[in-house]
Image (cartoon, rainbow, N blue to C red; front, side):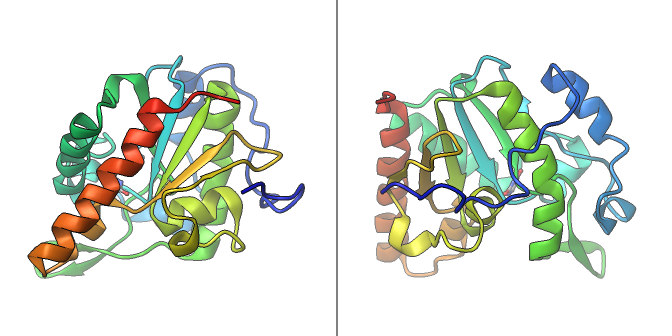
Length: 213
Ligand code: URA
C-alpha cells in the first residue's frame, strides 16, 4: 500500500539541529516537551548503530528500561530478542527506539504499572523520533504496536488491517507494521499466543529479508 502524500503527520520528520544520535540524545536529556519527564528516572533514548538500516520503534520504556536507561531490556525486550533471533534478524543490525522516551506509569504500592501514553504525549515526543530517523535515514522502519504506528503515520494508519504489510509512505522510509511484543505476553490462551508469536516472527523475517525497491 502506498500512503498518499501529506497523509503522514506534520509532527513527524521535523528537522532538529544535531548531526549524530549522540548529540541528539544529549539534547533530549533536558526534554520538557511534555510532563512525563517529571516522574521518570531518566530519558531512555534509542540505541544501536548509527549506520543501522532497520529501525525498530516500540511504545515507551517500561520499568526496567527506566531504571537502566536502555530500551527493550525488560520482559518485552527479552521476548523481542528471542523473536528477532528466530526471524534471523540480528539486533546489532538495528537501531531500537521508542515513540515516547520517558516511562509513564501509575504507582500501585511498590510497583509502577505501565500507563499508555496519550496522543498529545506521542505527538510531542515524535519530534525526537523524526530527528532520529532524519539522522539515520534507515531503509526500513518497523513499528511495534499502535503507538509507534501513530507516532509515525498519524491516526489514518490502523494496526489491524496493515499488520504484516510494508507501507510506502511518500514522505517516510518504508514502514513494516507489526504488533508489540508485550501483546504476546498478555495473551492467555496458549494456542492463540503461539499463533500470534509465529505471525510476529514471520513479520520480523520480512524485515530481515527486506530489500528496497
Ligand atoms: N516496551 C516498549 O515499547 N519499549 C521498551 O523499551 C520496553 C518495553
